[in-house]
Image (cartoon, rainbow, N blue to C red; front, side):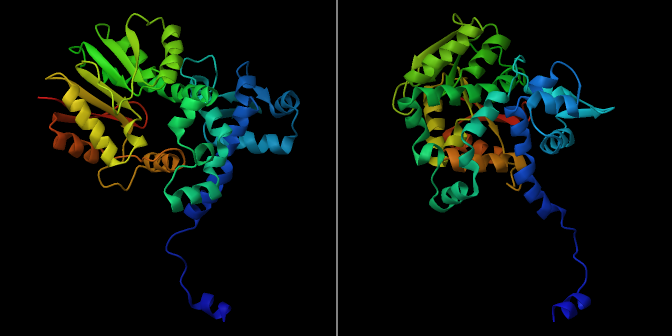
Length: 344
């Protein structure tokens, strides 16, 4: 019966590579995290090495080494020339700890919390519509209560934020602004970027006490203590200080629209006339059928927070409803964009 069915059937209209790609992603991309954990990239920072050299240095056999190295090469993190593996520009910029744009601490955060992206954990997050990180506890409350969790989380956030923090301040002209609020600013990466690129700008970093203490360490590293001041605050219930520029990076995606609407209204009411709001996020397109990075980021939010990614249209509509004008969307760095608007 089955043989007859196949003999009379037409071949599929498309090949099966997309369904294979799902399987390959499950096993393939973790190879990069393993290479990072095994310090493959740090090893190759000293220069190209053969497979044998790498195996001897890492004390692993050729079969697993070949599997990891081939994935890393295929995905553009390593180059293989004349039997020697070497680092590519992407790896040198983002996966060597000496780089000012080191991304590896965020990979460490993913490794330390890898159970959050397991099938069973994501299934529970989807079925219950609740985040599952830290055993299902509230992420921000957990950080208030466990300072070591906060340090590791903030280090990860800084790791992926610092590069884009030096880009968005030059996407459009912010030179007329005098005081910026970095609302729920995490490591103060964006305070640092804004203060570095906009010499006439002073920054007030807003977050709860423990985060302010951690952020101060990063501010000190960049010697920007005179330009950036931290202020302990509950962004939901406390009064915001006067400013003519409000900045939110990866804040809106922590919350559902009702809370985002609240923050937008609070920003509008707090801003000086002529002041500007800037929302820095990975955006869906307006049709919400892509891009993949934003869709995948929403899956990260399923595991970690109560929020999701938004489209530029959704955020623009929210800003317009509150009363903002001159709404603009600009590409920033990598997958990021800014949505910005002015208070009349």
